[in-house]
Image (tube, rainbow, N blue to C red; front, side, top):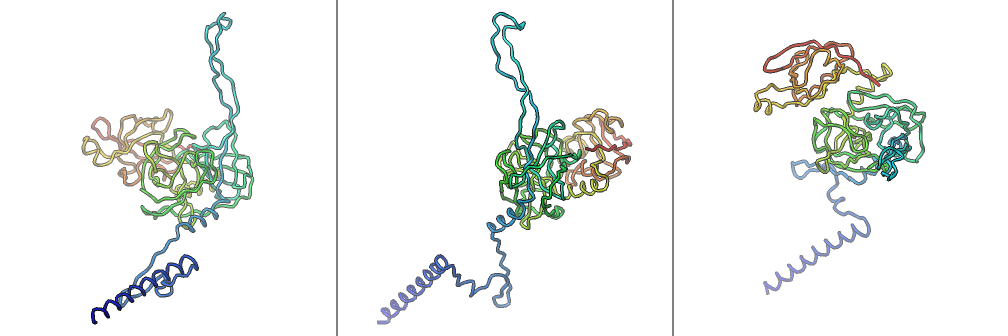
Length: 387
């Protein structure tokens, strides 16, 4: 009898638990009632002497809210330019044109979306410099409502692959964040004209790395300069996204999308927004981007590589621009710049560009370099390069 009683009790317990489970599921699915939320409130709570904090992020609603808030400030950059097109060869059997087989070219006008941008002030739109690198072309921006605005003037930042487009519009500026305290793993959202075709494409991901060095550019914009200290993200950044904003979950711009990796998937890069803030401060003061210019292309040699090759850590000079301050001071290809004004060049600190970008046009920098096993010190007067 006792065993039968225990079996009955066990069966009743199973029935009660099953009914509770099914009842909770039905309440959740059919009536959107969540009983546990009343028993265990979301947020901070205590069990005994132990406190717990529930961190809940509704990712879907965050993305929707950020995309809707940012949309009026994100634009597409379009180009109108002339290009020469080579037509197929045609046969000239009688040699009337001097050759048996000839080709001819013609000029045609192209109009296409080539990049993205975002509004930072009334009438001022930020994009990448390589998006608007053709100085003989005409550009316009297109907002989310497909309204077009002619770009009246372009200010190009020669140091950071940035450009400001001046237009007559009352488009709403977007809020700029702070890239000085970013963390790997932080949630981010990218918006732009993917592949130069799909306007206002929204993608999500995380910050995959910080302090990267890249060659900026994409298949629509072509090659541009080396950039240091950029943000790496796995949020899909496609050709055409260049110049668009990389946003945090609060809807603030923390980076300017600038390049995609040609050798890997889910690898994109963005210029930290604090770089733009510094450039905007200079622009608002002078009305132009007049940045200190050294005139070299380089690769940073990290400490481990330097030790293995018995050379010093620093910036290995790949190319010296003709007529630049570096060329005038005698810096040569193959030199390794190790110090500027006594500051040691380290890859972890952002490299050569980070230090030069802090300088002003007209300043003289004391550069220590390593050449053929010997250390030399030279003075270089930095010139301004703008627009």
